[in-house]
Structures are given as structure tokens and as C-alpha cells.
Length: 512
Image (cartoon, rainbow, N blue to C red; front, side, top):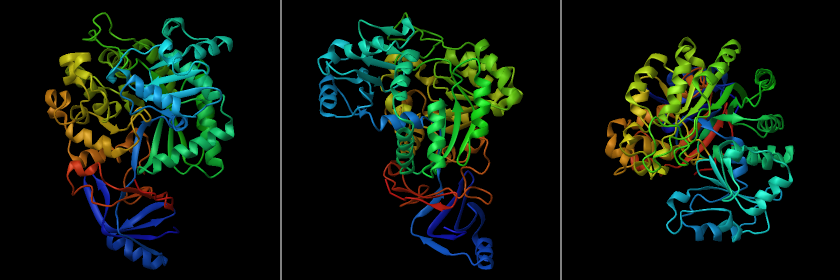
């Protein structure tokens, strides 16, 4: 599209909070220049081409926390997300011919939900695949399972792993050990092939109406692949990147990638991990897990550790994005952030899954930027067993949005990239679930949910042209078969979405 006037018979939604609609917008050089009568007048003077749509047009969704390189890998892995038993797991693995190098890798299951056998170890995996190295990654991304061939392959290749995070008897690996194994396997993929995989992941994302993402943790291979895909014209998606600070020389590495990033790729900051996940009981809690009374989880970074990063980050205008799921991990992040609250535009919290009332007060003073994942409500079916009455602290969307800026995301591929799912669970809190029972006051409205999936991303990602179609915004446009503001919340999950353009450039509008 070359500076077109876009018209929609149903209507065009420019913004969800406040709700602003029109029937026409003028796009010039990839930017929305005017809407309504002003757009018609300017289009006439420019001789702009008119393009009429029979869809409701709206700003593209923005996912402020996902992992595009992991999604790229996962699209080549065995999808185990629908597995409900050990038998189904075995059947799925044996039927698949997926390989990443010599390895067979599967991801997305939750053995806590198995109906036949909730215990998984290397001996059971050996009975499925005895002769090829096998790695199965838990849905949370914080736990993995190896067969004997996998353990032997790592030993032969001298992959160094933290001893306290590997159980050679069961084949269970957690946290950093898992990610070292995963990273080693990932590094076996050729650079040109990984760029192809990134492009495939992008297409998967665009098919769900998501036109911009934040990559919450990117290593050198991830950055190189993103830039290779961008240079060859295959990357259209807006990608905002948070670098993993992998060693003491992280500042030089960060500045290098920020300076060489180009086109649709921008480097904004660094990603840190303060704890693990609730699903694996590694999220760091102030009180023990109800179903594991001797365990409070694992703290990976203290307030002092985070402060050391902050001291340098504020000097180079880099955001610090810290993963904190447990309430005790959040305590550490808030302690570190409090002394830097004048830099709140650089302070991000990822997840904030459990937030106590006293922490809400501190958050209101600091006003950090928080990326939350509404669809976790659908996945964490075991929440009441795990943390009991503390479920009232979980996924406090209303309380958080009333005190600071939050935006929505999926942590994809932990959850599907589909925004319709997140919107549904943010509005309903899963009727009849513990979340609905213990904290119904945390529900938000449909227009608020749509706003948190679009415009508030511009604040988290420091790009004020993002997440709207008002004048001055990017022409990142999606289409709906029905008006999302005029249907029931149950209808949201059946909306047909197509991506119309990014930066005014018409792209594949395959519908979902």
C-alpha cells in the first residue's frame, strides 16, 4: 500500500481506552496521518488510493513478554501440550520424527495433570526412546527430563551443569541446568537455518493478529538470527529485545547489540531471573508451598544482586526486566527498585504472579512497568493445592492496573501466542475456578483488556507510536470479522483475526 486511504464499512477502532472509532484513516509512509473527514480531505489532495475493507480494523496486538527464539525451536519440537497421560506421552514421542540435530526434543506438557502416572523419570523415558538422546521440557520452562542416552551424551560432550540442579538418578534437570542443555542443543542449529526458523515463528505470531513482541531474554544466537532475518527482508514483525547479561561484560555486549540493531529490531534492556515457576515449585515464596511444606522455592537473585545491575543500567538508559513470580522474589525486586523509583521508566517486572496487599502499596509508590500473563489462569489448575488461600494474591490484574502501568503478554511458548485467550481469562477469571471464587474483584472489562493488549505496550516498550491507530501511530493494522467491542466475552475466543499491515505494508492476512 502506497499512502492509502483505508475505509471500513463496519468501523475502524483507533483506540480502546478511550474508545475512538472512525470509518476511514489515511496512512502516509507507514504512519497514520488523519482519520474521518480530515483523512478524506488530505487523501484527495494527495491523490491517495482508496482501499475498502469489510472487516473491523483495529491496532495490532502487542505481546510484551515472549520468547521468539524458543517459539522457533518449539515449532520444530514435538508439541506435548495436549498430553494428559504417560501413555499419550509415549505414543506422541514414538510417532514423531522431529529432530534437532541428533536430539529428540519435546515441550509443553504438565505431568502434574497426568491421569495415570504423575511420576516421570529417565527409566520411563528409556522405555520409550532408549537409543537417542531425549529431552522433554515441562510447560513452565523451568524443569526438564532426560533419558539415559541424553545424560550420557551430555557427559561425553563435557556440558558443565550445576550439580544441585541435576538428578542423575531420575534424569530431572531444573532452572539453569535445563537452559544450559537447551542452549547447547540450540547452538547446533546452523545460522541460516535459525534465521529461517525465526521467520517461521514470525508468521505464526502474525497469524494471531500480533504485530509487535518483546523478546524477554535474547542471547547472541537469537540476536544474530533476528538481524539476519531482518537483513534478508523476512522479518516484518516489530521486535523489542531484552538481552541476557551472560557474564560480567554484559554492558559492552548490550551496547554492541543496541547499536547494531536496525529496522524493526530494537534493543531496550536486559532480562534477569529472580526465581522460578509455581508449576515446578521453584517460585520463591514467603511461606512454604501447601503441597510441599519444606519448600519455599528458590531465590536466584537477591535485592543486592539486582541493584548491581541497576547501578550500571541507569547510566546507559537500559531497562531492567526482572522475572519475579513468587511473592518473596517480588520482595527482593521491590527492595532494589525502591531506591531507583525516579527511573521507573527503566524498571520492569515480569509476571508478578503473587502480589500481597502490602506489596501493592509499594508498587504504587515505585510505579514499575509490569508485564502479566492472563492465560496463566487457564494453565495453573493446581493453584489451590499448591498455595491454598494465597490464591487471592494471584494474577491481580485490576489491583495492579489501578496502581501502575501493566500490559498483557503470553510468555509464549509457555502459553499460546493467541491474544483472544488472554483477553477471555482477564475478563472472566475462568468461571468457577479458584481465581473466580477467591478474587472476582480482579476481573477487568473487555475494553480494558483490549487496551492492555495494545496501547499500554507503548509505555513498557518506550515507543509512543505503538498500540493505537490515532494520528502519529504506526499503521500496524489487524482485521476482525466481528466488532470485538460489541460481542459477548465468550464470542471473543471465536473472533476471526487477520493481520492487514505493519508500517502500512500489506502482508499475508491469513485468518485464524
